[in-house]
Length: 244
Image (cartoon, rainbow, N blue to C red; front, top):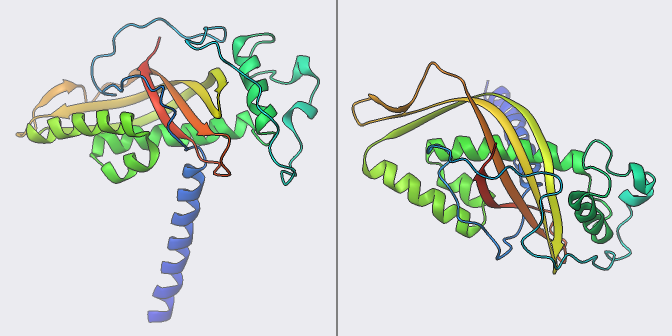
């Protein structure tokens, strides 16, 4: 019986390691251009909707030198003609397409579809970790400024003995709506459209925000960043805002 237990323990441990590695693949370095974080469960203010052509606040978008010759993956720019390169991802001649061109010039292995798969996993994990007050998970996934904002909200909630509950129903869409390279830092902005059930309860279990029986449509715009000068392929969340 002991041998059976040890066998399954090893299997579960291996699965946990694989899941952790996949989630870490979308996370990376802070950029120094982070917007103030926000409480994912506060009332969502109306903001200017982001688009594929939404201008960057910094015009210094540059094409960086190629990565060292040890990169063996086929460059993204060779996979399709320029007119078709970002089909289904970004509009032709848009600011987002130009940003993606600059990104793959430095990192030819960048795959936007793979990136979105990881970003969706990170999005759900971050929102859930926030609701659970899981600081350890958040610290691994967020840039320092964003983490500090989330931790402050968690601290305030705990001081009031409030409890947040979240249940994802679905992530209906995840689209890249912005990309740029500044210095040695790449940023990719993703708009998530999801459905979730969220509620906050007081110390007595009474609902003070949200509705445990109502599915809410939520749109979030999150920006991930990575240091292209590093061999570390990880990305981190550096900015959040509500979207339309």
